[in-house]
Image (cartoon, rainbow, N blue to C red; front, top):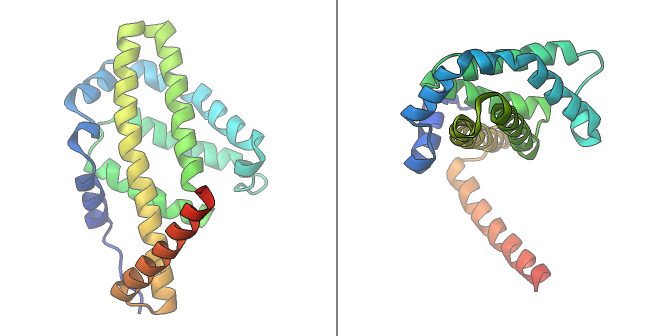
Length: 198
């Protein structure tokens, strides 16, 4: 029987495993608020950069079906507007947990997601240096680093936990049995990888 997923508890657990220094802070919220209009003005160029990058790289281009770019762009616009246009709060983090689940369905891997967070952050910081000056760009860079780390952790861990949970449900496995089997298999994998590395 399939278990239900408590997204709130899952995201709360992920956040509690992050060291507090990596989480977004009050000054991150302040720098976003101070630069909100400017950040929102980047939407069109970020959307173009994001999807031009994904479609130009064969590995990431494979996740798309013909004719869906406009729809995907609207989804990214919504993410950007919410990320820089409103406070980063628990509702936002839980939404990012849902993104992890959607990524399984869409075959968007964690490396794809993390690399695109980096592409977006780099672009924002480079643009900020010329538009806002080095000091403000540095503060934005720090804010985006903490937000990206938190978002990346939530999306990737929700992806992993949901993937494993779905496989357990499909196979009818008890989570304790899965954990024990996984422990044995990981030990074997570790030994094999150590042998490969010499």
